[in-house]
Length: 192
Image 1 (tube, rainbow, N blue to C red):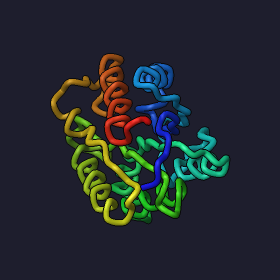
Image 2 (tube, one colour):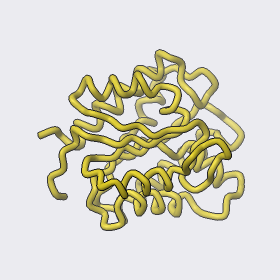
Image 3 (cartoon, rainbow, N blue to C red):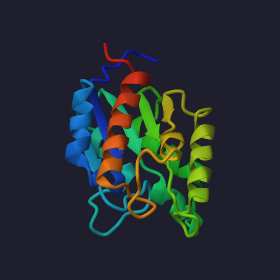
Image 4 (cartoon, helix red, strand yellow):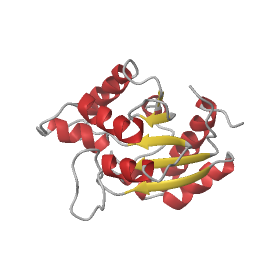
């Protein structure tokens, strides 16, 4: 993989990001990273909410077209796997590939993807569906040499980041998640 300065990062996310942009920006700054964050509550890769200006895919395309040359963090999937469980006309792998293609179809730009976890036992956002998403991410590693995974699910399963509703974290949980993601970025893609 070519050398890329990961002191600049674009982070694209859903409500788990949107509800904590200021704190996440600070967590990145604490590890020497300047972050541009594009997030919206309920965001998915391929399905658009009426109030969201972008799907995840559209956000990535828009940012990539500016010539951005840093690293990417994708914190999407919670809504995507729920959408697939609800009967969306595509697979989890299709959604992942669409996002990776939007970021860089040549598979060069470094991407760290944060996997998913909930404490829900039933419904579309049940953790069983998060597990299926995480398995699809692991399979995507074979197709995308520029993709690395952040196993947030393993951390979240320990209970160190409390949840408020089984999907979203409490403020304390957000702090743990934000610090974890920022540190994961510099661990996977060390700064120069």
